[in-house]
Length: 272
Image (tube, rainbow, N blue to C red; front, top):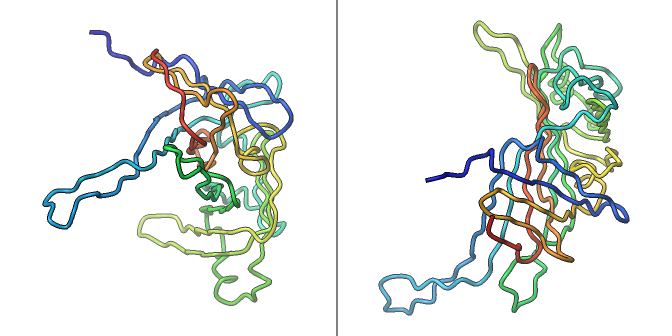
């Protein structure tokens, strides 16, 4: 019996809808994990004296969860993907903390409302807003940095413009402190964790990357996925919505993005 493995994957590509007519992005060589899921919303139609439920399917949602590496787009780059060594800028309020940065993430979420018609069997989420959160862990070199602002700073002092650059990928946003934590443990280094939320519009990559599309574009993409054991696509004139994308960075590791796409209507499936 020939069982399919990850080596049977044939295609994982998306076509961004951020501008006029961009070409498809083939991300198969960057793909680390992939999962396609479908789930039905159900309602219990059992009567008052019915002992067991009688579930009816009323609406189906279809999603794709994935993890990809972030490509190194510099011409003639020695390495195909970005790592911690490619991070060149991390600053808060104009002060560089690159030498103290240990790990972090940029989390972008597309808020949605269900926009399918009453007679449609499939959900069609529509974007209504974009949420952003930056979380980092920094070494404590001499004094804590963010905790004093949380405890003793004015509201204005908690406003920190964040700038982050890895390779050619740049992110900048006016933000404000949501939380800070100073960690001290036996036989450990001292760390400071901070969470920041936006206080204005972000600027980011203007290309048709996943980050550029969810941050600045429509969040819509057309999908073409061939697992070798079945093909999933958005079909003609249909889209999927990038509802979540997290860009993760940490010392001694590759830069990864994990996220979720939700089909806006029925996915097209065909045998592999």
